[in-house]
Structure formats: C-alpha cells, structure tokens
Length: 291
Picture 1: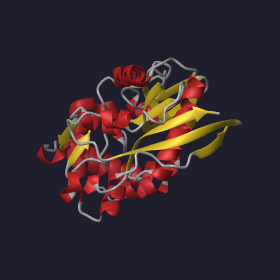
Picture 2: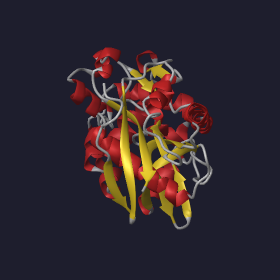
Picture 3: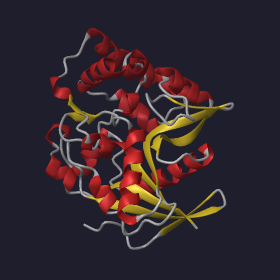
Picture 4: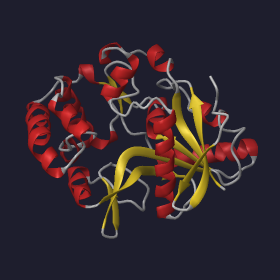
C-alpha cells in the first residue's frame, strides 16, 4: 500500500494556502505500536509541518478497546437508550434543535445493543456524557472489530510530544504533532468548549450534555484538538484541525459511524474482523504545510 498519495492537494483556507498530504497506512491493530504513522510520514515531512493524527488508531494502539457484547444493560441504560435517545431525542428534541437528519434517523433505529453502549458510557464516563443522544464521550463504535468499541486515547498530549520527539530524533526536523477527535469544538461568546472529557487547555472540556446543548446555541469550530506537541494560536490550531478532517473525509475510508462501517464492509457489525478492516485504506494522519 502506498504510504501517501503522489499528488499534493492544495486547499485554500482563510486566505492562506496549505499543502495537504494524506498519510495512508494499514489498519493498526490493538496493542500494536503506532510507529507506522511516523514511518510513513518521515520521507515527506519538512520543518514546521503539522502532522495531524486521529485519536482512534492511537487508542486502539494503546489497547483501549472494550467488548460491548459482555456488558450487561442496567435499568438506567435501558431508559437512556430506549426512551431518552431513541424517542425523546429521535422524535422530539432532535428535530426541534435542528440536529442532522442522518443523526435523527440513526437515533430512531437504535438497536438493542444501544442499551449495552449506554451502560458502558455510564461506567466509564458518567451521566453527563451518557445523557448525550449520540457520540457520547468520544467513544468510537466504528473502526473496531466485531462488538468492540474504542475509548479515547490515554494522555493524547503525551502522545503528541512523544511522536514529535521521535521525528526530531530520526530526521532532525521540528514537526508540530496534533491529535484530534471529530467530535466538535463549539464557540459561544468568547468561550470555546467541547462535550468531550479531554482537550487542549485552551478549550473547556468535560461538559457532556451541557456542552452539547450549549453548542446548539453557538457555532461549530471544527474537530476538537486533544493534544499538541508545540503551543500554537488557538484559532490556527482549529483551522488546521478543520483542514485535516476535510482531507481525511475525502481520502480515507469515511466510516464516521458504525452504520458507515457496516455499509463499507458489507457485513453485520458482529462479524467485522481485523482482516476486513485491514482490507480498506486508512488515513490516520495528515501532513499540513504552510506555503
């Protein structure tokens, strides 16, 4: 598999030109080092480039996956899945608050397994995240085999610094490494915030359902940066995160939800294997270079 595309894609963002290069890898398996992301980037990276990495392959590399098939639903998780998310949000609050039609349709057809998922969120992240109708606490149901889900990576700030040091040691170039999650950062007034449990310090985090509701009143700033190896202006960080996310959506496997994964791999969620995931292209990282 090619480590990257030969052509560089030029994106014009806020009057600044960037060269944007997707980094292709095979599927990174649970417990497997994420060094392949570095290896496939080294020949391309230049001084002061941004290397923007998705959180899911890092979390899977750390072995931060949980098999939801062994989770036993509770009364609370059943109510959260069947009444709160499926009906209250799927038929009442969702349409009233103008959330995406695709999200509303997904909520209305929540499977039995949603009860288990809500129980996992309650156990790991608590009520304020479980009350979100979907995409709770950044737990990823796609890009993991079978009935497994991936949690957020442990200490993404440390990961970004570690990767930056490894790149410097191998090619002697300063590269700004950023870890992002596709869950949104919002802006309301002067405050930037996210519902996610973690983020870079400039973004208020761990707001759960409150952040989600406040976000309906504010504006979406783009994906949420979880860690960055060198401090940067927050508006520039968010701009780079948006460009990276756009590139990944255009060039990657585009499996934003578990339903996308099922459609892409032509299989039942429970039967999706590591081999199936390894059979499609993955873009865990993007190089962004100012021109």
